[in-house]
Amino acid sequence: MKFVCERSELNTALSGVGKAIVSTTNLSVLEGVHIVAYADEIELTGYDLEMAIISRIKANVIERGEAVVSSKLLTEIVRKINADEIEFEINDDLAVTVKGGNAVFNITGLPAQDYPELPEANAENHMNILGQDLKEMVGKTIYAVAQNDQKPVHTGIKFFLEFNELTLVSVDGYRLAVANKKLINTDERSFVVPARTLNEVCQLIGNSDGEIEISTARRYAVFTMEKYTVLTRLLEGEFIDYKRSIPDGCKTRVLVNVDQMEDCIERALLLITDRFKSPLRIKMESGHISIVCKTSLGNSYDELSLEQEGDDLEIGFNARYLLDALKNSGSDEVWFELNGPTAPMKVLPKEGDSFLFLVLPVRIRTE
Image (cartoon, rainbow, N blue to C red; front, side, top):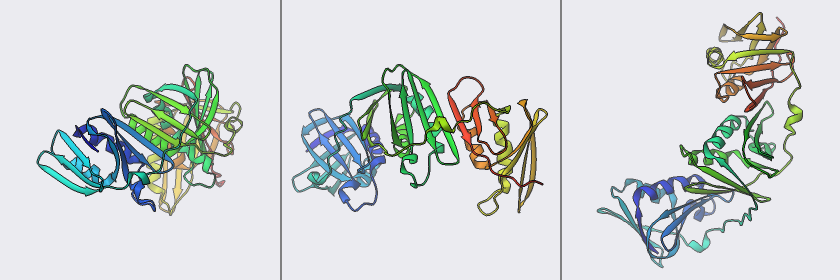
């Protein structure tokens, strides 16, 4: 196999597919990037048996073929070479030559026949969404994904596709996040995508304003974008019935300035550490909200003016969970809707229904 291609394009492709390549594994070939040279382009693949990232770039292919090369080493070589073009060649003895400018590297490849075949997704269901819309929805939900595998299905984000609407849901046992988006669609289905995959997809989208096609089969999903294709295994299991978790109505409703509330919580966090933990004591009454924190390090008090409807209320929250909800709202103002000191609090946009967050309260001692 032999080809010549633009160094910048090869560098970008290697960086992208490298996100699916593990650095340490019992199967050494998975530490490599799989390269296939076709008539006028090369295809690069990274695969960890759960997720694959594929990129195709234009190339002057002199001799077709395939090879597997250490991803880490090849990426560093291409990054360090100071030339506009890269010449790549591998012979039958797996001797690899990489040339660029005056630099020449001779390294050893890996047997291409040992590289595992990617599963055939056989995707039959398709939908299209703007990449930036998907990034926004994932950003509003990924923070609430479970961080342990006690229930593996909750380490992903569930996609609910309904008529002309997409809903993403995540839950970790202490909070729940829902994001909604209207789109043109006539299909109905649901599936759970690992959070790690969605994080990588969002990084690959970057600032692109193009569309993404999402295709699904029973066990796999495929995200197809301008420069990359991402294939991922779907998570299986019984996902929470999120609609039943959302309280009806509210007894207390307050409109909060997000930046000001974030500042108050971050000041309180100065007294909260892994060793000295204490919930925030939040009191809503007479058009203002007070935020009190007491730990062994000391105590703090803050307050804000707000728009309030309904009953006065005192309630406790984990400071970091409440801060996460505010930071991921992407809003200047949000509604807090509450039904008492032991019921989950809803965090909603000032207008519309683009997201809904639930944060469980923490019991506070009566003083």
